[in-house]
Image (cartoon, rainbow, N blue to C red; front, side, top):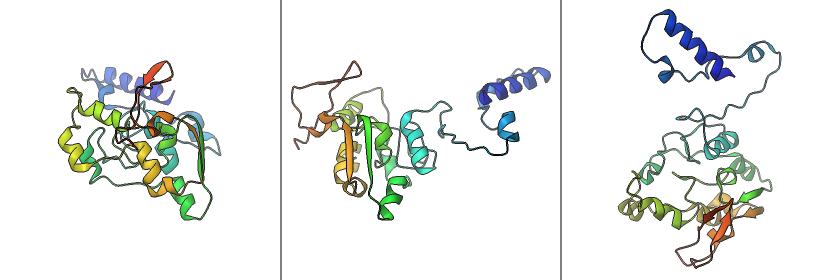
Length: 213
């Protein structure tokens, strides 16, 4: 409603000035307020649109809720200096802590329970740092490397930067190792590559381990 209201105001301003330029191209509509946001005495807001999309995905939105920091769409664990699918950008991007890190630093027991895969974007935004929410296993990384239509991922970069898939991060990174309870799905990304295919949400999610671990 906020976006619609303020984009309509931008269009009216455009017509009033007889300006033929497209105001909406540079106007996201998020910056103004609705009546109740300005006039109710107690208001709590959680705005989870990300730094490069008005309508974001669940990786960047979950990360915003867990960390308080907006990031690039389809990524998590870094500020918005990370570039989607660009392995090299992980080197200089700033890592950001989440509520999981803060709780562990405070000596609390931690964990997560999910009805989706444990490596899926919404739980993974707690513990993972990655240039792609889809890199839940090596198969998915190599799928992007072998896709000629995707810029930013290639075999040379993989060999140079050696990005960890999300499942491996959960197993090896400090945040994952210090988790006390993990409950969820996604068994395939924990198993060696084989002919078994696991069906999720009516599509074939063939995410298993190439490293034979």
